[in-house]
Length: 209
Image (cartoon, rainbow, N blue to C red; front, side, top):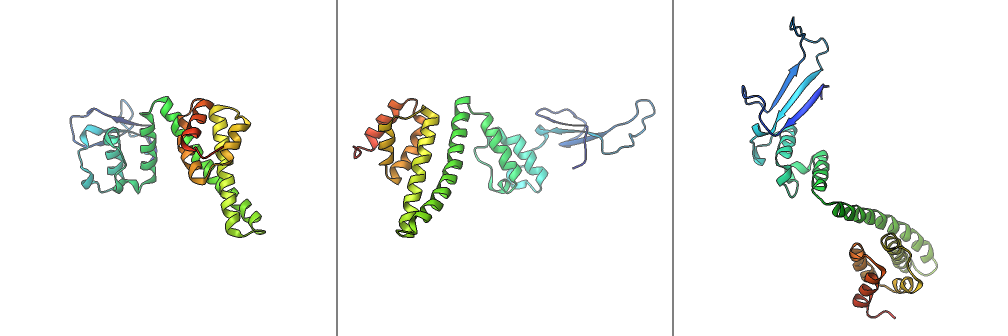
């Protein structure tokens, strides 16, 4: 991409003299109209109302970006033909997040952090479980390691969400099965107090003592 002094993207028509979507202007001296010697310096204007191609008519990367800029507010997902461009996929994620409330953004970030930590914890627990399992069987070691990693991760997330947990709660968490831990992970961000957690355990894990 050539260097430019400025790029302006507008949602209105600036130049009625032509139908070009992208207009590029070079610099000239005011009186003599001499071209500026450093040709890469330009002003670029993108008039979105002039871009009317359909999704099926997009032929190049410029078309795809223009379509995205024009249609982003109405898109629920990135069309498959455009998702092959990673930058457009990332831009869509950012644009989608702009429309969220602060609470929704916070919840989304927590869930993303949870997923990153979950993957890391499972990898670590698998390694620990394999080492432990050498004495009692690789498969058993993997299962125990994964479950221990799940429990530790859930505890950290609950502490971050609700504060310190009492021993009774921690003991009950240690008795949860993998399926129950997965269900709890989905419910964590709906809790606002330890009482909410206790109520969830009572409802969903009645087999615990």
